[in-house]
Image (tube, rainbow, N blue to C red):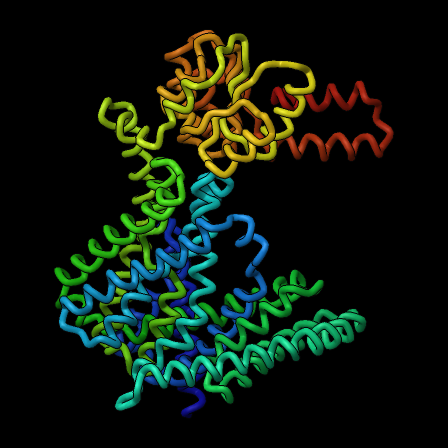
Length: 565
């Protein structure tokens, strides 16, 4: 009967996870919030449908191991290197400054020093899952602020590992913290060195042997076994099982088998990960949340304000514009999903009390729910302020206008907004044809590269009317918007039309509903990257069936004009 009771509780948890996930999806919220709320609902503090949480927590522990293992598989050192100092140094600075602010709040609330330190680092992490999803949906992943946010999030994700090694030592009573940190660091270093040495020698050979069997089942079992074995081995060194799984994932991630390993293990990670987030929800004391609404609102406002200020300051210090800095700040205001992982470690090690855990989780969920609205509000606020006299003076503090007005006298030129891959190809062609052009770019690192290459360029925000005027847009023949962000393109076009109503404008657009708006405000030609890719695929397919070039072009024109049924 006990086994039957356990089975019923597992079913209740899984059904609750499904219902919570579906509800969150309907409300256009992150699915993990649905899992957390489902856990709160069925917990002993909620409806009481689940009373024995130990076995569920054990299965959730497997979810954490697989979650960190896949994080290791996906972690890209090359991406981190490409983004550079603003990600690495800026990310580390952001973590330390935010942790210091969180520590200060903990002291004000009367918490102990270990608990305040733990809360500070919980607060320093943002949500990779939510931010990247929103950037992709808004078509801003390849923008300057999108790349900076991605880099800082990578640093935050990586910082989780030393946090999980060091912070639990704060909960050891009557022990010298410095000595405990040295012991923990020494054990962790020994484990990492051993894993790296063994990993480079053993893992490729094991995976190669298994891959030769051409059995997906064997490959999957091997990958799962390796992640669990690394987690168990970590325990012998006093290191968190999740840290061991991360290092195993990182080592496999450098091999040829990384993509297949990730593809095979993701369904298991998602299933057990759902159990993990539901189990976290079961730990939340709802009575504490309902009896302390003012405290939670105050903590939420503190988190949003502090993280906005610090995350905005990081790009600004590294020479990026106010526009990029504000967009980064608005995007990273929330507490992230890996804060929940760290909070679980804090509760298990005795550093975090149940009340602090409930407060942290309540505040984290609130900041996550608010993130889409904060990003949209931030964009709207920026564009509204930019059109005021005060806003233009504030947003041009970096000297964009000065640099722009130093450009050579131009006429009949093309103004290219943004210098990504498509603009790079365009400038090469224009240069070869001896056609005059000018690039407006918001990334200072790209500006340095362009100037070294002799490309005429302006540092500034192309949606700013002062920058457009300084590019001598009234004398230009063509304006080309190559950046993906719709709101930026929309504002650029509106301001460009005010300066030069007869200007030809070509713009990139990702979504059909955005295309209609851009057409209405005066864009002459719209380029849809995904649609153009589909046309090229169609061209190659028809060519291989022997269709003539003339007929292929007719078909493609019909598709482009929407006349083919």
